[in-house]
Image 1 (spheres, one colour):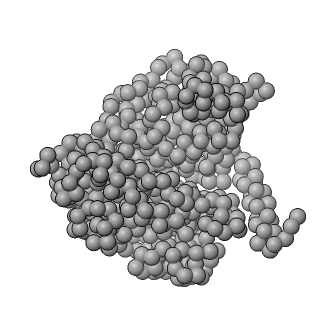
Image 2 (spheres, rainbow, N blue to C red):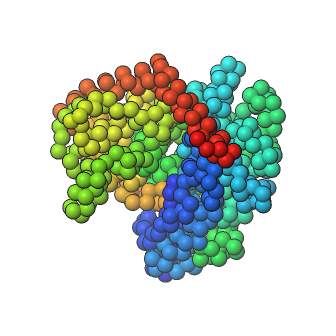
Length: 563
């Protein structure tokens, strides 16, 4: 054991950060720890302030991320029993697109005196969808001008991404925008905290920052979009690019004190939680689509072919592994939808029944739903409670359940929501296939892989064999693989993945009888998908009505008025 080398991977998720200590030789996970963010997601108000945030906002506090380094990393190291002197590298991954406005030295703006009460000074989490109007204008202008980068993103830029969110700050709080010296992906900010060097990773720069063929959208485009915004790239965004698996720098003395790791060890270039998981699942070849299923789902896949895929989140050269085109698509809400339903739409009697059986409400609903035949509930749902990321790229869309009657039970709707997310994935898979990028294997990572009913539904709906990553900490393991490469233990990520990655092949296979039944339901899903997503503005109008009402309430609260 004294000759073994180890690395640490840290996965920063939506609600918590997870660290894992991994043996370089074989990927064995020897110690893990999780730290919940103290402030969670700010979607109602800023910390300690009563003024409500507008609809569709989702912010975070960057100090919560530093606390993960101070807590989860030392705890994982202690749990592993590994001598810190044997650790040769650390790597991190993050949700994306999650943006931190900072000063030139990396100080987040919400920590600058005078800015703690300014919402735009806080981290904009990936699911901050309040920049849809800015995204719409970017898309309209890019299409009008025939911008060559637009097809690389399926023809639509998301409100979740860097330019839409940056434009929102520019237009809604100019003082914050002017004080902001860097507009930083959280994936890069945390690396900056670890090694003292700001290196922009190729993954988020390409997928979330509209960087294609070495260039961002032009100053001319940005000036036409919003006068004064033309200097956004050189003034706020541009930074040297680091490739995935490269060394960003060495661990600083301060970060060594936080983590308990040796000063100077390799700190890898940052990465996205979804993309970093592909090597952990040994899925770096063409045709292997990895779905990282948690609060949302991100679909990533490598290919040796460049194609334009409608509604994809992007295709980036080397976006997952060097030498291949990396494709990304996704669903904005999956586990979040199931959690919302359990928290808001299940009667107390079900909670009491679950407690009596010693199981969670999720487990109870899954057990009851698994007793049904396909279609027995008579329902079909749209999985748009957090908008649609792919293939419609529209966060003004919302959730829908059709077919409910007075006889509908909670387990019926719960199963319909599970199925809706599988139908959404099938739309993505078929869109890739129709565009000349075949999907031959479906690999699942993330917490939802623990639900066998959900996994079987996905296999039946997509008619694909479903493999499951062999780790409970897929992104963190993927980060550890990149740490090993950055430290020089392996020459590249693909080779490291062969030794350190884990997967159970064909854990679930499609059942033909159930698959045929799901084909009928999927036809109804598609009809609703196209009607509400392409042919009517009903959902957009409802969102506008909601925002107007919320703004009136916000104005009354701000002005101290009462009804």
